[in-house]
Length: 128
Image (tube, rainbow, N blue to C red; front, side, top):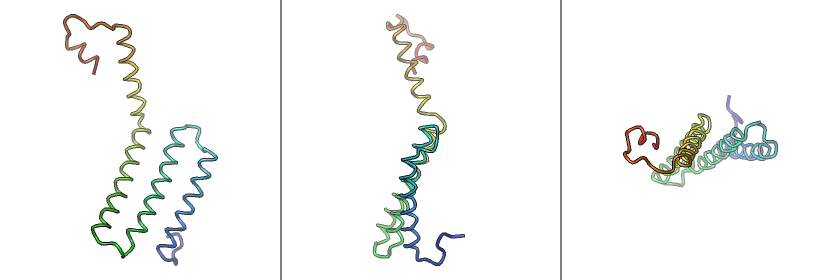
């Protein structure tokens, strides 16, 4: 079932954009999730969806050459890949793991600021 089935594609896309921006405003005001991380991910997902639809308006236009349409398509793909990377890093806590790892490095340097006279394999692995 397609939204606005009897409508023109451009009208469907513009209506979807209007709805997305409306829901984005509601999302910003309400912050529906308890987690800041989830609110950020949801906000970015709505922004990326809006950009994808907006660029899609240009993509379906017949006024551009195939080269320009390929660039538009690749931009849409890279935006969505970027969002998936953001989603994965937030959902799987990669940024938190990196923070913990950096904190451990900083803490270990404060506890033992002077390097050992003869570095061993174990100490090199601790610093990585």
